[in-house]
Image (tube, rainbow, N blue to C red):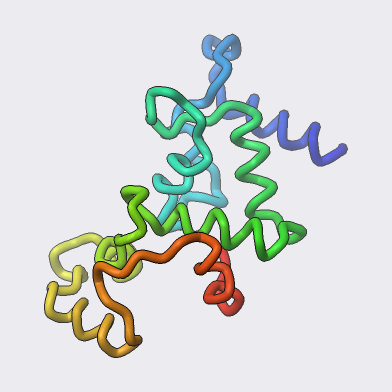
Length: 147
């Protein structure tokens, strides 16, 4: 089966029989995909790829193809770093290091770092909490770790 057909089949399987006439899959259904279940940024991934006017993280088939393409082994570093920047930029302002660190360390009170621990971490890597970085600046730093 061709990749496009496999993608369409997977997209269609996310919709229940009564929802087959919908043009988008709700985020909750997308999050049920095995590839996303264990990702700490799964909700943010849906929001980044979603073109929904409702900003609800739902995905059209075109959005779903974009997501699959960006996470494929054949995606270029430019594409991966572009999407990685937006996935890590939680409120689209470029200043979300604290949220990123908390997402990576866990979002419970037991695992979340204290603000002073985050400041120390940031200091250790020579960044400032409020530093803004654009996606074009992010690409060279993402060569070591990509989406």
